[in-house]
Amino acid sequence: MEILVCVTRVPDTAENEIEVNADGSDIERDSLVYSVNEWDNYAVEEAIRIKESSGGSVTVVTVGDGESEEVLRREMAMGADRGILLQDESFAGTDGRGLATILKAEIEKGKYDLILAGAQADAGAGEVGGMLAALLDFPYASLVNSIEIVDDKTLKVGREVDGGNIEMNRISLPCVLSIQTGINEPRYVGIRGIRQVASVQIPVHGAGELGLSTAAVEPRVRREDYFVPELGAGAEMLDGSNEEIIDKLVEMLKAKGGLK
Image (cartoon, rainbow, N blue to C red; front, side, top):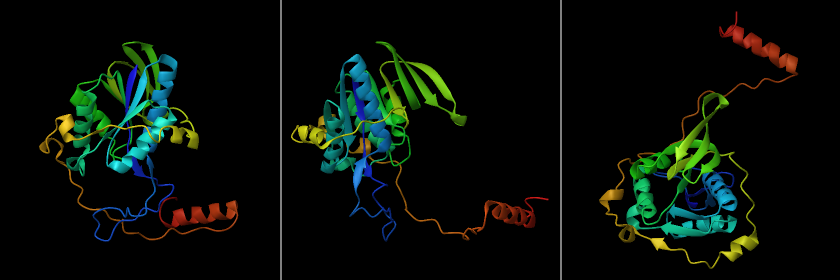
């Protein structure tokens, strides 16, 4: 099975204090530590497991700048067979539909049975997977937390739905799936693996190679502002034993009309 996984380089929230810049146009990025998007990492692990059990290959692709190569190399060290960087000045600042358009152009250059993406990949919007499927006219499932190969034309996928329930579906190949965290446990990537792929040539495809005009990736949605919400009244912390705290809480609820 030929699998393509869309990955993204994002600020590592475990390693950074995220702050809005002075004019509210963006977050402060000068000293940020970056890593692969967590949801995408689960998607790559799932792709590698499918390859290990059923054969085929795994390609990772990202839209970004030269620094995004580090994300591709990390996923190649994890077990992906190759990486592709989609880089062009016209791609900078594009929106979800623009990203889906860029990825579609690359996908149509190859022949893939399965396209995976992280469920929360595009600044948390969770829209690129669905848009990509629509542009390709492929079947689509979101929030996927299990994949079973039925035959060479069909998958059985589980989706996480409200209330912690799982919805099972059969979906025809080729298709696009957005992967939820928890579908697997991504493997550890060691220094040795990273060194092995450090010198591997990663092809870079721009707008010309993809046959895309500037108008095709022009954003239709523009981010107007970043801001930190104003703080409301502070919380009142209750001290004492569990019994004392419960008594105080009950009295406060009665005083505010929450209990009679």
